[in-house]
Length: 167
Image (cartoon, rainbow, N blue to C red; front, side):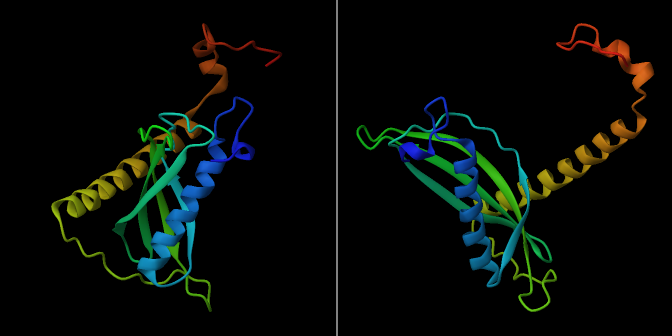
């Protein structure tokens, strides 16, 4: 990681890492699908440890799940000190990619995923569970938005770090 990738705090900017992760997800998914793919979602971006200028960053990517046209790619980010050899797991995220037909730009069928090990099967099952939880979360969030009654719910702001203006 070079100095121009650093943020104002002197650590590598999260956007740089996300860009690298997106590129790794693209390479992994397009290789499996043998066609162009696009990113449609990124699940759970949480930076566990900062990445320092001068560290070597490795991105480990694997297709964990395939649907009809979608693929979920797990990306694990490891930062390594070149001087000491110490390795730190900085984050893991999951990118949902969709394969596109290059002529019609419509979603296209992807090959099935060969699960060769128990770890492969675990990752596939975990991706299914993550999809289920994400859908339930999205439904709950949408319900909360539509059922929100600002006038009735204003008392919930008491004790929060906000100042009410003329509402």
